[in-house]
Image 1 (cartoon, rainbow, N blue to C red):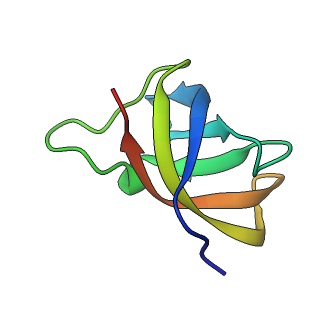
Image 2 (cartoon, rainbow, N blue to C red):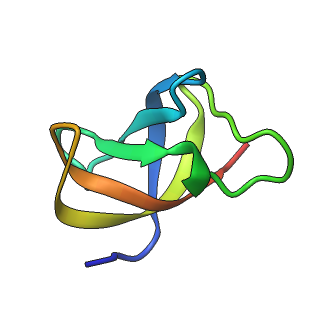
Length: 76
């Protein structure tokens, strides 16, 4: 199930592997995301501490996380 847009902060992002974790009040334990979900032109990368807005899927199993982002947009 996809939810409305949520604001969060990138906890970590592995540029080489192409995935990371976003923290927010709506995603206890973190929200997994893949680089293909990052909505920016050009090179798709994010940095730890970066503010983002994202949609999420609940009750999924992705690398030990129960939340997975389906769209990620940097706020800065």
